[in-house]
Image 1: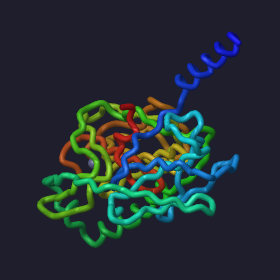
Image 2: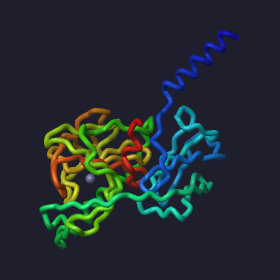
Image 3: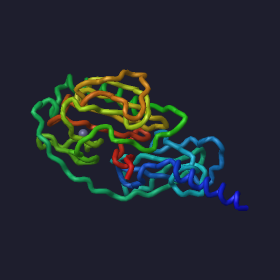
Image 4: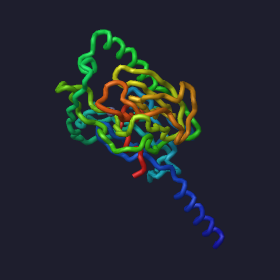
Length: 277
Ligand SMILES: [Zn+2]
Protein backbone atom coordinates (compact mmCIF):
# COMPACT_ATOMS: atom_id res chain seq x y z
CA UNK A 1 0.00 0.00 0.00
CA UNK A 2 2.78 2.37 0.99
CA UNK A 3 4.65 1.48 -2.21
CA UNK A 4 1.50 2.21 -4.20
CA UNK A 5 1.15 5.60 -2.49
CA UNK A 6 4.78 6.45 -3.34
CA UNK A 7 4.17 5.34 -6.94
CA UNK A 8 1.05 7.53 -7.19
CA UNK A 9 2.99 10.40 -5.60
CA UNK A 10 5.83 10.06 -8.13
CA UNK A 11 3.35 9.79 -10.99
CA UNK A 12 1.67 13.00 -9.82
CA UNK A 13 5.03 14.80 -9.59
CA UNK A 14 6.04 13.64 -13.07
CA UNK A 15 2.67 14.69 -14.52
CA UNK A 16 2.85 18.13 -12.90
CA UNK A 17 6.49 18.55 -13.98
CA UNK A 18 5.98 17.51 -17.57
CA UNK A 19 2.39 18.66 -18.21
CA UNK A 20 2.24 20.37 -21.58
CA UNK A 21 1.66 24.11 -21.09
CA UNK A 22 -1.08 25.47 -23.33
CA UNK A 23 -1.49 28.92 -24.81
CA UNK A 24 -3.46 31.35 -22.68
CA UNK A 25 -7.13 31.10 -23.62
CA UNK A 26 -8.81 34.35 -24.68
CA UNK A 27 -12.15 34.05 -26.47
CA UNK A 28 -12.02 37.39 -28.27
CA UNK A 29 -11.27 38.43 -31.88
CA UNK A 30 -7.53 37.81 -32.32
CA UNK A 31 -7.50 35.39 -29.37
CA UNK A 32 -7.56 31.62 -28.83
CA UNK A 33 -10.37 29.22 -27.86
CA UNK A 34 -9.50 25.90 -26.21
CA UNK A 35 -12.45 23.60 -26.86
CA UNK A 36 -12.74 20.20 -25.10
CA UNK A 37 -14.03 17.81 -27.78
CA UNK A 38 -16.45 16.15 -25.37
CA UNK A 39 -18.00 12.92 -26.62
CA UNK A 40 -15.33 12.10 -29.19
CA UNK A 41 -13.79 8.84 -27.97
CA UNK A 42 -11.55 8.03 -30.95
CA UNK A 43 -7.98 6.94 -30.18
CA UNK A 44 -6.61 9.01 -33.08
CA UNK A 45 -6.91 12.81 -33.12
CA UNK A 46 -10.20 13.90 -34.70
CA UNK A 47 -10.03 16.19 -37.72
CA UNK A 48 -11.31 19.61 -36.60
CA UNK A 49 -12.27 22.61 -38.75
CA UNK A 50 -13.19 26.24 -37.99
CA UNK A 51 -14.10 28.83 -40.64
CA UNK A 52 -12.78 26.55 -43.40
CA UNK A 53 -9.35 25.94 -41.85
CA UNK A 54 -7.96 22.81 -40.20
CA UNK A 55 -7.52 23.29 -36.43
CA UNK A 56 -4.86 21.98 -34.02
CA UNK A 57 -6.08 19.08 -31.83
CA UNK A 58 -3.97 17.73 -28.96
CA UNK A 59 -4.57 15.04 -26.31
CA UNK A 60 -6.03 16.65 -23.19
CA UNK A 61 -4.26 14.12 -20.98
CA UNK A 62 -0.85 15.51 -20.07
CA UNK A 63 -1.86 19.10 -20.85
CA UNK A 64 -2.36 21.84 -18.26
CA UNK A 65 -6.05 22.14 -19.20
CA UNK A 66 -8.39 20.31 -16.80
CA UNK A 67 -10.83 18.42 -19.01
CA UNK A 68 -12.96 15.29 -19.00
CA UNK A 69 -12.62 14.86 -22.74
CA UNK A 70 -9.81 13.03 -24.52
CA UNK A 71 -9.03 15.77 -27.04
CA UNK A 72 -8.71 19.56 -27.06
CA UNK A 73 -9.09 21.77 -30.13
CA UNK A 74 -6.94 24.91 -30.01
CA UNK A 75 -8.45 27.41 -32.40
CA UNK A 76 -7.27 30.88 -33.43
CA UNK A 77 -10.15 33.39 -33.62
CA UNK A 78 -9.87 35.95 -36.46
CA UNK A 79 -9.81 39.69 -35.69
CA UNK A 80 -12.81 39.91 -38.05
CA UNK A 81 -14.94 37.45 -35.97
CA UNK A 82 -18.25 38.95 -34.81
CA UNK A 83 -18.90 38.71 -31.04
CA UNK A 84 -22.68 38.57 -31.58
CA UNK A 85 -22.39 35.41 -33.74
CA UNK A 86 -22.02 31.89 -32.28
CA UNK A 87 -18.75 30.34 -33.43
CA UNK A 88 -18.95 26.91 -35.03
CA UNK A 89 -16.17 24.33 -34.84
CA UNK A 90 -16.57 20.87 -36.36
CA UNK A 91 -14.62 17.80 -35.22
CA UNK A 92 -15.18 14.65 -37.29
CA UNK A 93 -19.00 14.78 -37.69
CA UNK A 94 -19.73 16.62 -34.42
CA UNK A 95 -20.49 20.35 -34.13
CA UNK A 96 -19.24 22.43 -31.22
CA UNK A 97 -20.43 25.99 -30.62
CA UNK A 98 -18.73 28.66 -28.54
CA UNK A 99 -19.22 32.33 -27.84
CA UNK A 100 -16.68 35.12 -28.01
CA UNK A 101 -16.56 38.48 -26.28
CA UNK A 102 -15.77 41.80 -27.91
CA UNK A 103 -12.36 43.40 -27.49
CA UNK A 104 -11.66 47.06 -28.18
CA UNK A 105 -8.20 47.43 -29.72
CA UNK A 106 -6.56 50.87 -29.62
CA UNK A 107 -5.80 53.01 -32.67
CA UNK A 108 -2.26 53.80 -33.77
CA UNK A 109 -1.15 56.57 -36.14
CA UNK A 110 2.14 56.11 -37.98
CA UNK A 111 4.00 58.25 -40.50
CA UNK A 112 6.12 56.46 -43.09
CA UNK A 113 8.50 58.29 -45.47
CA UNK A 114 8.04 55.98 -48.47
CA UNK A 115 4.68 57.19 -49.91
CA UNK A 116 4.37 54.01 -52.01
CA UNK A 117 4.05 52.05 -48.74
CA UNK A 118 0.83 54.03 -48.12
CA UNK A 119 -0.48 54.44 -51.68
CA UNK A 120 1.12 51.62 -53.67
CA UNK A 121 1.50 51.89 -57.48
CA UNK A 122 -0.52 49.38 -59.58
CA UNK A 123 2.79 47.47 -60.03
CA UNK A 124 3.28 47.38 -56.24
CA UNK A 125 -0.29 46.11 -55.74
CA UNK A 126 0.31 43.35 -58.31
CA UNK A 127 3.54 42.39 -56.53
CA UNK A 128 1.86 42.47 -53.10
CA UNK A 129 -1.03 40.22 -54.30
CA UNK A 130 1.43 37.56 -55.54
CA UNK A 131 3.38 37.78 -52.28
CA UNK A 132 0.22 37.55 -50.17
CA UNK A 133 -0.81 34.33 -51.94
CA UNK A 134 2.64 32.86 -51.21
CA UNK A 135 2.42 33.87 -47.53
CA UNK A 136 -1.12 32.50 -47.09
CA UNK A 137 0.06 29.19 -48.62
CA UNK A 138 2.79 29.11 -45.94
CA UNK A 139 0.28 29.96 -43.16
CA UNK A 140 -1.97 27.11 -44.39
CA UNK A 141 0.89 24.61 -44.34
CA UNK A 142 -0.22 21.50 -42.43
CA UNK A 143 2.33 19.10 -40.96
CA UNK A 144 2.20 16.58 -38.14
CA UNK A 145 5.46 16.44 -36.16
CA UNK A 146 5.72 14.08 -33.16
CA UNK A 147 4.91 16.82 -30.65
CA UNK A 148 2.74 19.94 -30.95
CA UNK A 149 4.26 23.30 -30.02
CA UNK A 150 1.95 25.09 -27.57
CA UNK A 151 4.28 27.67 -26.02
CA UNK A 152 7.01 29.97 -27.38
CA UNK A 153 10.16 31.68 -26.13
CA UNK A 154 10.66 35.28 -27.31
CA UNK A 155 12.36 35.46 -30.72
CA UNK A 156 14.11 38.80 -29.96
CA UNK A 157 15.05 40.86 -26.92
CA UNK A 158 13.62 44.38 -26.57
CA UNK A 159 10.57 46.38 -25.55
CA UNK A 160 7.22 45.71 -27.24
CA UNK A 161 6.85 48.77 -29.46
CA UNK A 162 3.41 47.88 -30.92
CA UNK A 163 1.01 45.31 -29.49
CA UNK A 164 -1.12 42.97 -31.60
CA UNK A 165 -4.49 44.16 -32.91
CA UNK A 166 -3.99 47.93 -33.11
CA UNK A 167 -6.27 49.67 -35.59
CA UNK A 168 -3.76 51.24 -37.93
CA UNK A 169 -3.53 54.52 -39.76
CA UNK A 170 -0.54 55.18 -42.04
CA UNK A 171 -0.09 58.89 -42.89
CA UNK A 172 -3.70 59.36 -41.60
CA UNK A 173 -5.16 56.65 -43.86
CA UNK A 174 -6.87 53.57 -42.32
CA UNK A 175 -5.15 50.25 -43.12
CA UNK A 176 -5.40 46.62 -41.94
CA UNK A 177 -5.12 46.08 -38.16
CA UNK A 178 -1.73 45.14 -36.74
CA UNK A 179 -1.50 41.36 -37.17
CA UNK A 180 1.59 40.75 -35.03
CA UNK A 181 3.71 41.95 -32.13
CA UNK A 182 6.52 44.47 -32.71
CA UNK A 183 9.70 44.12 -30.69
CA UNK A 184 12.06 47.09 -30.95
CA UNK A 185 15.74 46.15 -31.06
CA UNK A 186 18.92 47.54 -32.61
CA UNK A 187 19.77 46.84 -36.25
CA UNK A 188 21.79 43.59 -36.45
CA UNK A 189 20.52 42.04 -33.20
CA UNK A 190 19.77 38.30 -33.52
CA UNK A 191 16.30 36.90 -34.24
CA UNK A 192 15.97 33.32 -33.00
CA UNK A 193 13.50 30.45 -33.36
CA UNK A 194 10.95 30.48 -30.48
CA UNK A 195 10.53 26.67 -30.63
CA UNK A 196 11.31 23.83 -33.01
CA UNK A 197 10.08 24.21 -36.55
CA UNK A 198 10.77 24.04 -40.28
CA UNK A 199 11.41 27.00 -42.58
CA UNK A 200 8.55 27.01 -45.11
CA UNK A 201 9.07 30.41 -46.73
CA UNK A 202 11.64 33.17 -47.09
CA UNK A 203 11.48 36.25 -49.30
CA UNK A 204 11.77 39.98 -49.71
CA UNK A 205 8.25 41.34 -49.54
CA UNK A 206 6.81 44.75 -50.38
CA UNK A 207 5.33 45.55 -46.95
CA UNK A 208 7.07 42.95 -44.75
CA UNK A 209 10.61 43.33 -46.11
CA UNK A 210 12.96 40.37 -45.61
CA UNK A 211 10.77 37.64 -44.15
CA UNK A 212 11.00 34.11 -42.75
CA UNK A 213 8.02 31.82 -42.03
CA UNK A 214 8.36 28.79 -39.74
CA UNK A 215 5.96 25.84 -39.56
CA UNK A 216 5.66 24.35 -36.05
CA UNK A 217 3.09 21.72 -37.01
CA UNK A 218 -0.68 21.24 -36.67
CA UNK A 219 -1.46 24.58 -38.31
CA UNK A 220 0.81 26.70 -36.09
CA UNK A 221 3.16 28.98 -38.05
CA UNK A 222 5.20 32.08 -37.17
CA UNK A 223 6.46 34.94 -39.34
CA UNK A 224 9.49 37.24 -38.89
CA UNK A 225 9.58 40.51 -40.88
CA UNK A 226 11.71 43.57 -41.70
CA UNK A 227 14.95 41.58 -41.24
CA UNK A 228 18.30 43.04 -42.37
CA UNK A 229 19.71 39.55 -42.94
CA UNK A 230 18.24 36.04 -43.37
CA UNK A 231 20.39 33.13 -42.15
CA UNK A 232 18.08 30.19 -43.03
CA UNK A 233 16.64 28.66 -46.19
CA UNK A 234 13.41 26.83 -47.06
CA UNK A 235 13.50 23.26 -45.70
CA UNK A 236 15.86 24.00 -42.78
CA UNK A 237 14.86 22.43 -39.46
CA UNK A 238 15.42 24.71 -36.50
CA UNK A 239 15.19 24.31 -32.74
CA UNK A 240 14.59 26.84 -29.93
CA UNK A 241 17.30 29.53 -29.98
CA UNK A 242 18.63 28.83 -33.49
CA UNK A 243 19.42 32.07 -35.31
CA UNK A 244 17.02 32.93 -38.16
CA UNK A 245 18.60 36.26 -39.08
CA UNK A 246 19.00 39.83 -37.85
CA UNK A 247 16.84 42.81 -36.91
CA UNK A 248 16.42 45.38 -39.69
CA UNK A 249 14.10 47.96 -41.18
CA UNK A 250 13.24 46.51 -44.61
CA UNK A 251 9.68 47.01 -45.94
CA UNK A 252 7.06 49.36 -44.42
CA UNK A 253 8.67 50.53 -41.16
CA UNK A 254 9.40 53.63 -39.11
CA UNK A 255 12.60 52.15 -37.59
CA UNK A 256 14.42 48.85 -36.89
CA UNK A 257 12.23 46.23 -35.18
CA UNK A 258 10.98 42.68 -35.46
CA UNK A 259 7.37 42.18 -36.53
CA UNK A 260 6.44 38.74 -35.18
CA UNK A 261 3.21 37.11 -36.32
CA UNK A 262 1.75 33.92 -34.87
CA UNK A 263 -0.81 32.07 -36.99
CA UNK A 264 -3.08 29.24 -35.87
CA UNK A 265 -5.47 27.66 -38.42
CA UNK A 266 -4.43 30.36 -40.94
CA UNK A 267 -5.57 33.00 -38.41
CA UNK A 268 -3.22 35.62 -36.99
CA UNK A 269 -3.54 35.70 -33.18
CA UNK A 270 -1.94 37.66 -30.33
CA UNK A 271 1.63 36.23 -29.98
CA UNK A 272 1.77 37.04 -26.24
CA UNK A 273 -0.86 34.31 -25.62
CA UNK A 274 1.86 31.79 -26.49
CA UNK A 275 4.41 33.16 -24.01
CA UNK A 276 4.85 31.70 -20.52
CA UNK A 277 2.81 33.90 -18.11
ZN1 LIG B 1 4.36 45.00 -36.82
